[in-house]
Amino acid sequence: MTTTTLPTAIPMLPTSAAAAASRPRRHCCPRPPRRCGPAASAIAAAALLLASSAWISLVFSSLSPLPLRRLRSWDSSSSAAAPLSSPTAPPPPPDGSTTRFSSADSSSPDDDSAAPLSLRHVVFGIAGSAQFWPRRREFLRLWWRPGAMRGHVWLDDRVPRPRNASLARAFPPIRVSEDISRFRYTNPTGHPSGLRISRIVAESFRLGHRGARWFVLVDDDTILCPDNLVAVLGKYDWTEMVYIGAPSESHSANTYFSHSMAFGGGGIAISYPLAKALSRMQDECLERYPRLYGSDDRLHACISELGVPLTREYGFHQWDIRGNPHGLLAAHPIAPFISIHHVEAVDPIYPGLSLLESLKLFAKAMKTDPQSFLQRAISYDRRKKLTFSVSLGYVVQVFPHVILPRELERSEQTYIAWNRRGNRNEFDFDTRDVYRREMTLKGKFSAFLDHLLCLMWMKFKYWGTR
Image (cartoon, rainbow, N blue to C red; front, side, top):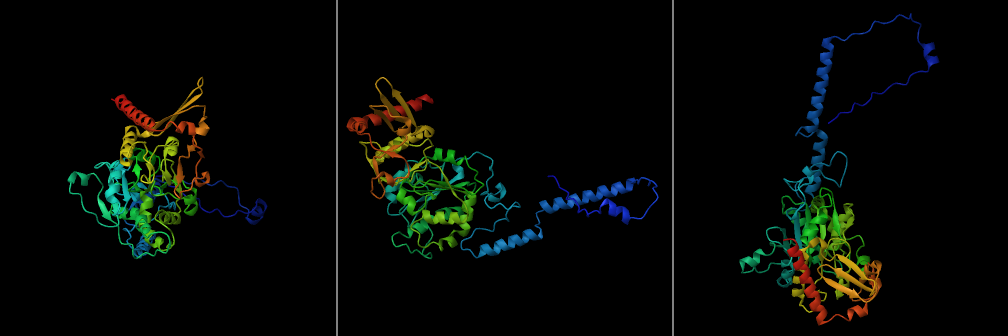
């Protein structure tokens, strides 16, 4: 570390004429040069060494100087008034930054803070209800990896423990959320469960997950790709306050809630420092928003008070749609697929299969090659004027005329909005009308062909990596 010596103040000098008139005349006799003896040099060196040692000990000593002690006492007194607060935090860094933390201050105690991000650095908070858990746990089983992933399922009430021990180990541990009756809820159309779900990240943080860098909130009816999630989160600095997700596909939902809000069904990723800040202030913050509708808007309100904007990632999908999801899956953006939500509100992804069978096949294709899953390849037969579109792991489409890529990037509107309206203005992304001639090929043979092509692609990827 280098030290900087501040220049001493220099008094203002008189002008040359005034100086000549003011000073008395002296004989111009040269002064003999001053000589510093060895003793004076030794004294100066010792003084410099002593001053440097004192400065270094002041900076690096474990005993805090008075200003830092005052900061710590103020921090402890203010945090003591907040309910359910975590232990007192160290004072802010010297540069005054409020959104960046050093690895020593911000880390959940992480012994390998320089190691690449992996699943063991991510803590999942899965929101559910005791009423729907027996059915929706089958969705979670499709992507959860026991032993490799950690987190909890947060329910509103206790549920019977499975008698089969292997079945119990297939899911994350179940926890019942804290009582929320002390919070006000005045929205006439919503449900107070939004308060409970909005606090899952804060409750998860207080459990003290060692080595955690990210807290990810999803719903129990969400299908998630863990590998792509880690790849996307690895792009960001987890020692900063980061809020990652995506808004809804529904224009009405975004207008009602916010275009800058992450919807939790598709997934919300919160860095450790942001989770730490939320755990301290969220309960007090929630009292300022009793009229909000649900959980995502309450979480967004408190994060906004901390000055953290939404970082949008296009692989998160709230899926506020109903009906046939074909158009969205076939036109997935050029981004790693991370999640889909509301899987019970749409038709089976692969025609001819039940909902659960279809999701099992979908998850199997997703796990085969996560990075290229749902990415589209386009080819043309100029002589026959055909367009071939392949969405890897999902569908092969053949159009009887040439369709340029700009048009293919638009999603075929094979679905309706969550509010059951079907006009194009209901969606906050580009859509196009369904190609009727292509859709007439859909049927039993088309379902069989889609299934067969998906299996062939998975076999090819498997044997290609052997």
